[in-house]
Length: 308
Image (cartoon, rainbow, N blue to C red):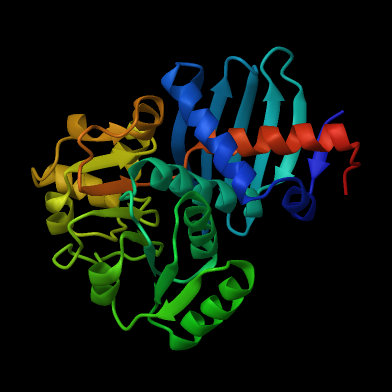
């Protein structure tokens, strides 16, 4: 019998530290050739757009289908052997959790060794997961926050300050975030670049996770030109969806063959000597959904939770 799992239940069954571990594991399995993924596809209706992506894990013989059309967001797990539905989950929390966890994995392998200051541009819903993941993965002491809305900045700092034992501080501009941060996360829905890299530190990890459509842009070509290493969660997805990388490749700033998939870093480690300036472009992929959904499904079965 398929389990129907509410968002409230999924919150009880998985937290950020566990999500980071299972997402790291799925990237290791990708490197070993155990996972096949279907990049995001979109179907437009009169007013809304349905987004679809899928992944299969050979060892588990599970297929994950993620489908979302705002405000609806679901993950369905299928048995690869029988085709039966194993679970259907409301994925609003899970999808944001796994996106944060992917940044946590990237930071674990790619952040400067002495990274202590995290800068966040765009203090919205997704930023809460980004900050939590990176604080768990690195020895962050201070989080700098910039957003155009002062009230939103203050609310974000107040709420996150209750959850994490690090110092939070408002920043006055994206330029200040660039100049003072060891790790910079851009978590927006901007259509124009917000940072150009002119003030970034000598050693830095930049994470862009909002520019997951060709029309979206968070970092400029000049910033990408300054990077010594560019990493993404999935190359075929980036070639369709990563607005910043698509524009940079079209301009001859970077070549797709030079963009490194995150699973290679997880399997082999960052190149040595470590590149000083690194960009991680996160698009969000079904492999990550599969990792967290399988964990939640297993926990629900073991705990004998009934659908709610």
